[in-house]
Amino acid sequence: MSKKIIAAMLLTSALALGACNTVEGAGRDVQSAGKAVERAAD
Image (cartoon, rainbow, N blue to C red; front, side, top):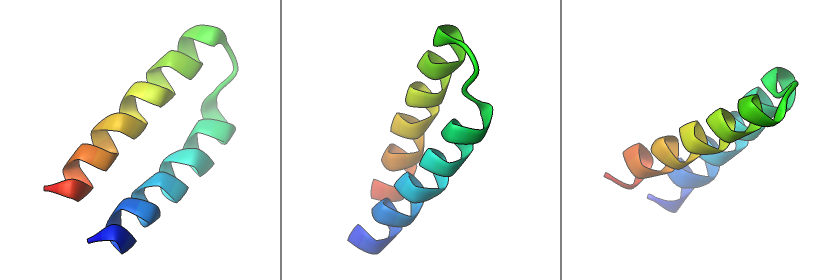
């Protein structure tokens, strides 16, 4: 299960770095990262 969480975090980090141009965008990226970790944990 921890491999799924790490994979989700790495994927989300890559997407966040590519799409995060503003502070608002950063907030959305952090929120989506949290949701990805929650889904991976289930």
